[in-house]
Length: 176
Image (cartoon, rainbow, N blue to C red; front, side, top):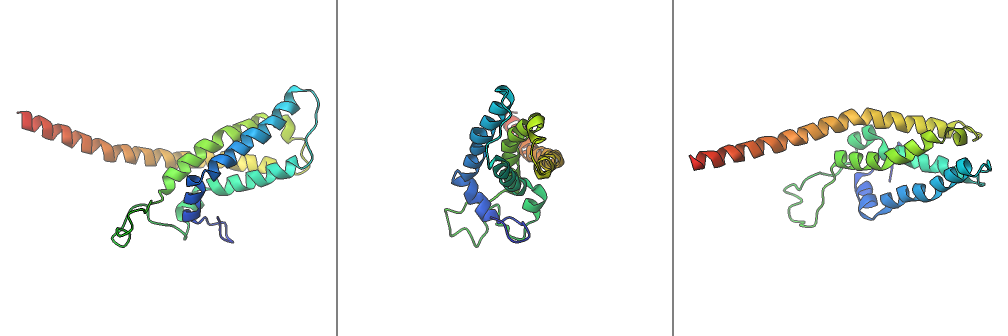
């Protein structure tokens, strides 16, 4: 999914989403991590299963790579977002829109990061600070990318609005 410099291959990310693997990745968090957090905080037994810290560290590491908006937008391994003349012959081509991917991934990432942030007592039991650092890094990524997402959404609305306005104006001109 990523080269040796952590630059994503957009085609692989696209297939990761279309195959359902990205949904499964976030569902895995819901199923496994939330269960451990709920048991830890509600049962009164302060027990974390063996291997859980490593699992969470690896999950967060992949989440960091999947959500890194700067790398996704600037990767040298990009694919066209729309059909070009060379691609027109292939009717099954589906483009990759990096900002749509970022929006989707960040929406999916928000709840797990909020869950981990609220599980502060559990996070403090881990031997390494890597997990806490990853959570903070992902929170900062969500904030940093929110301005990019807002700009993208406002541009998208601007593109749709003039078309609607010109269509409405043309319809009114025909009526007059």
